Image 1 (cartoon, rainbow, N blue to C red):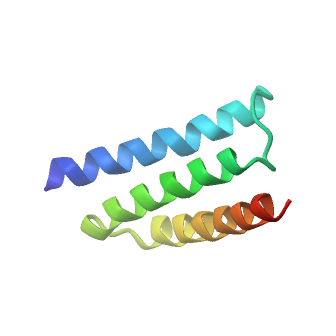
Image 2 (image 1 turned 135 degrees about the horizontal axis):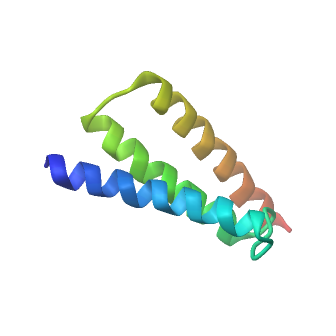
Length: 79
């Protein structure tokens, strides 16, 4: 299970960083549903890995990142 949890966490990190990079090079807009969905998925995967290897500060920031992403999903769906 160690390697699975680590792999899921790494995929989550990759997704979050990919979206941030895409935002910086202006290939995606922060208002899009895709941006928020991928960020939310990344956060969930990181939180899954944190379930097995808990770190409070990482859990706090990923929970906040997920909450913000869910708000972005809500706004994108309403638009």
